[in-house]
Amino acid sequence: MLNELVQKFKIYLEEDGKSIKTIESYVGDTSAFVAFLESKGANFNGEMKRFYITSYRNYLIENQYELATINKKVNSIHSFNRYLVDSGYTKDIVVNASKDRVKLAYGSERQVEVLTDSQVERILFYIQNEEKVSKRNKMIILLLLYTGLRVSELCEIKMKNIDFLTAHLKVFGKGGKVREVPLKSEVVDAIKECLVERSSNPFADSEYLLVGQRGVLQRDAINTLLEKLTVKIGIDVRLKPHTFRHTFCTRLVSKGVPITTVSKLAGHSSIDTTARFYINSSKEEKMRAVSLL
Image (cartoon, rainbow, N blue to C red; front, side, top):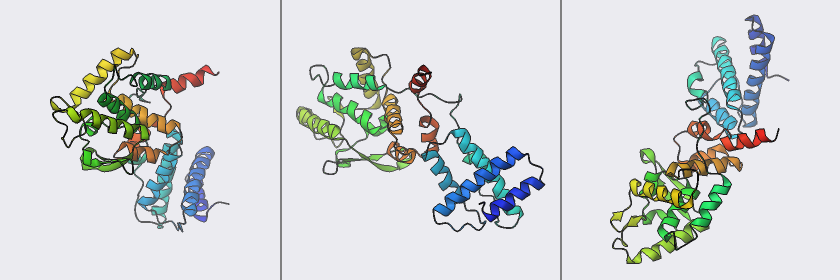
């Protein structure tokens, strides 16, 4: 049974001359929105709040609704909002259609370059060879793969930001935002092994985790390391810090981790950023899907 306000909205749409399909779509979307609010304990009486919109939108994104579906629902709720204002139930239009629609990256579905499971496995096997890969470089690869850090964040890791007891890393991201990222046991072990190896390094007492013979490592050194590793492994993907970051986020999403959690772990300023890049299947996933036909 339709909510009383939704029923009135339906009559309003009919009197406005909207087509049957448009009315069905608007009423269905609006009814689902009101049902969501009521499921959260909100006693919806027609007063629209910005919080209601953002919460519902995040719910849709987290549950991996198609972007076109989310945007259609936003349009419907925007129309419902206008009706509520015109009817005196609420004062303001709180739905910002252009802002609340989930936008695709430039070029329609922007494809991010991610490592396949077999490529990840190949890299992991390669870095086990201590004759070819130093403990420090092994640690760098594992940090990139299992934390999704930006290269700038990686270079800025300080010893005091690593909590070995709880296996967490405090990360200082863009705009001074701080987040905590859990560390897999393999990463913790790699860090400890690296610290033992660097005891003879002239910068062994540095407050920074990543050091070389000339001091603290900078992003250029990380990029050079990955370029050399690409050639040595013979992998057909150019390894870059962001390749690992994209892989980290994509693997989490593919394993069913809520998009809001992925967003927090990645340190994105908005869930939009996460959804824009990772809510769609990777190119490889799409190819596998089509191959099943």
